[in-house]
Image (cartoon, rainbow, N blue to C red):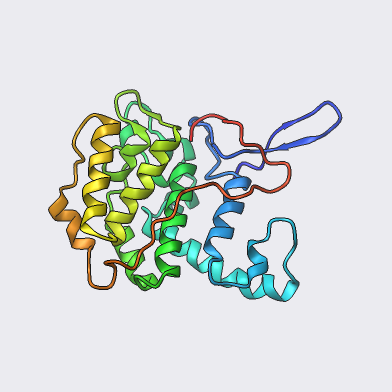
Length: 244
């Protein structure tokens, strides 16, 4: 994990912001991203877990830790299981963007994807549209190569670079919703239309295929929220650093 990006002349440390440079060989994410993800995954825990300026009690932290750790483990496993190769000391750079084959890299090695996935699955679960195991099953069913599916909303397959524009992150959010728990047929049509308008080509997954995620358990129950970044910990910066 990338924690600090620089040390000043007087020893002042600068926390790593939201992005990990594409060529970083060690980092899976940054401390600022992990902070955001932990807060997102605490959706049904003690309210103090969502307050950025106050430390929860030891009792709350202890009770929350196992829940959040389990949820994060589930997501990492479902999202292409990057832990296995990282534990085997595979270079994070090679997982993120293998040289000359960037489109085959793991989407979940990209902070913008990590945060979007955590936010969407948490909102689906917190609204009771689907049970957590079913959400993880559907998440695991996505193609976990960044040159495919919803990940292309934030990835340029032509030059192998990430796209950092806000509208692309919002499109990623919308596509994840319609893949995992489409709130309506109209949401599917709208997301595919937005993809074509933004990317200049038709979305690779058909409306018919996406309609499979529209079930009596999800239709009308999901309120699609905006992917607005939550407050970062003190010392974190919103400045871009490397790739998203």
